[in-house]
Length: 288
Picture 1 (cartoon, rainbow, N blue to C red):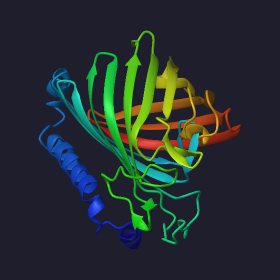
Picture 2 (spheres, rainbow, N blue to C red; picture 1 turned 45 degrees about the horizontal axis):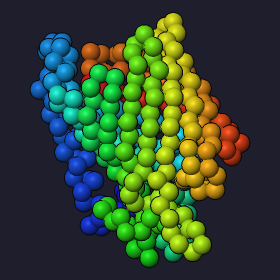
Picture 3 (cartoon, helix red, strand yellow; picture 1 turned 180 degrees about the horizontal axis):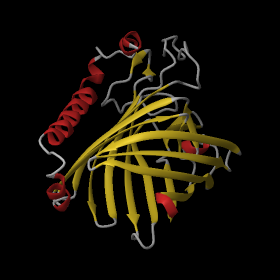
């Protein structure tokens, strides 16, 4: 594992910022936890409108996202801190690429079968509304033979730069009507296609409706429908309006301590645009 990590190029200057932010968020969450014992957690919960934090880690059999297959066996972690509705979040993925090792890119750079990704987001939440700006970075992308840097927006051709930014707006109606609506649009970075030899930005957009139905024994049944309104990465830049995600998920969580819960889940996905069936089984733990 250590040699694989070195293979990702942690010594590259372009990776300094995401690693530093991840360390700071992790230290922040760990420090908050260390200073708050189980007796004091009730006071922390009552003040969640002012400050809160959580951390999560899970193991996924497949990395499936918005009707797309993004990789095989994956380990994913997340940390978030919030204050008066403003929040900062960092999400990591480390996983195999199609369950294969020793893969190389078009320039012959070894990818060691790893599909590393980090997403950093900043946003604001108020009641059922949430708006955020997210920067997604893919470690295994190269531009003109060199590893793509974290703030390199210059190349947005398909398969080009490893950086993408997205704006996201989410609205959840209520606990009584657990319907969540989401609109996501990419505005910078890798998100383009060729038209008559010219590179055109797609502004790839994904719109989703999700309904979470509580069942007995703390089980939740979720249904999702996701569409893209115009030509975008979700259809390989080949189609206009398309339904790209129809999924059904079953999940259950257990509170094992005042500050810790474990959860399991499984999802079956059909992408009508490609008629590709997908699936995932996951198990995770959350601290808050």
